[in-house]
Image (tube, rainbow, N blue to C red; front, top):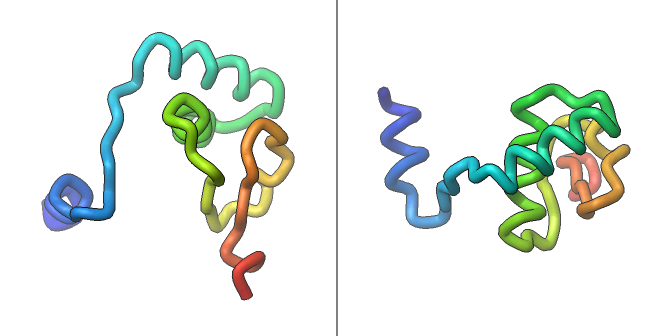
Length: 76
């Protein structure tokens, strides 16, 4: 419950619904890159809302070319 409270009330976190457009984009990304479903939904959401980049700790997601994927190692 503590994490849910942080994620839903933190002023710097925005939550987005998974629209049919996001779901379609996620399915395309999942098929194209053999991604896990949660990763593809998060990436598709970033694309839909016009994010500048996707920050992750998963270096495997750098294969995605539709958005600039930045890993924590890139910041060191």
